[in-house]
Amino acid sequence: MEDKFDEGPRNYNDESSVVEFDDHDEDEEKEEGKTDDDMDSSDDDNEDTRSSKSNIKRHTRTQSLEKATVIPSPKRRTYRGPSLEHVGEMPTTFKSAMESSDSGKWKEACDSEFDSLQRNDTWEIVPLPKGRKAIGCRWVFRVKENQDGEVERFKARLVAKGFSQKFGVDYEETFAPVAKFTSIRVVLSMAAKYGLMLHQMDVKTAFLNGSLNEDIYMDQPDGYLDATQPDYVCKLKRSLYGLKQSPRMWNQTIDGFMIKMGFKKCESDHCIYIKRDDQDMILVVLYVDDLILASSNNELLKSTKMALSKRFEMTDLGELDYFLGMEIKNDRKTGMVTVQQTKFLKSVLTKFGMDNSKPVKTPQDPA
Image (tube, rainbow, N blue to C red):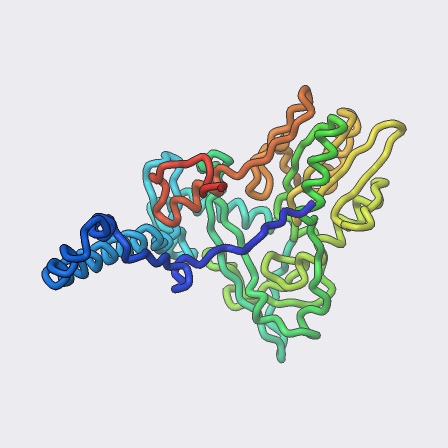
């Protein structure tokens, strides 16, 4: 069931959110105990003083309130190195990556990506045909962290500049489904109720498994020009990250394979696959290139993993513990699956400069 909220986020900078204080203060309450004669004789002398005190008090309270409700500006995006001590900016180009302090790690990541592209026979080097225009490409860099925020590895991805593709020439259909978050929560609930094992797998360079129906030409990637044919271009044989049709081609490829393995698609979510074997069953959740496997039988789980690894280049991540920013723990003994987002919450606090704030049990007075 989807989470529902009674009201949307509050805009603390809106004038309607400012609290107004009454001018009635303690000094005025003391004045009420005086007689009429005393009040008449002291009104003229104390009127300016009371007004001044009230204004000062009002100004101090309002200023304090405004200061407390101002949200700091987000900090600039940075990443932590493997030592967890050095901090640097994420490179945006191949040149900046090679000039950074982590150039060795970025070069290793680029080499790994390029080798994977070559193994998958992603393109062939050809002269650009007359009347055709080659699309560009660029390197995208990021560091992959675990659920504790520690750096696991440096990643580099070669991405085609799909925004320059022309409809009807370079692509046709583009839609590709992903598993709904509601469906993911349902699978986790089933695991808790029926004591299912939860495992996860990742498809390496998933989009390269999809074949293209169109002729697409792309510039050679920075840092990896063919020395014998530097003026030639890449004629793509397989879908590449960044192309508009790549997600669709990949989904069609793995969908066909899952059906061939004997899985059936869920009618309400076409990225949930189920397979029954006598009294046992296995569920597969597909979110682009990330998979959750929920099974009641260990042998059925192993055979499914083996079949997937034989067809695609997979990474077996073992028991499910971190998926799409969610920290997941499956306790089959107690029949409880817990989901939390500690890393995400800490990143939000750090982003707005509130990582040193004191925690409270409830965000506001429940009364």
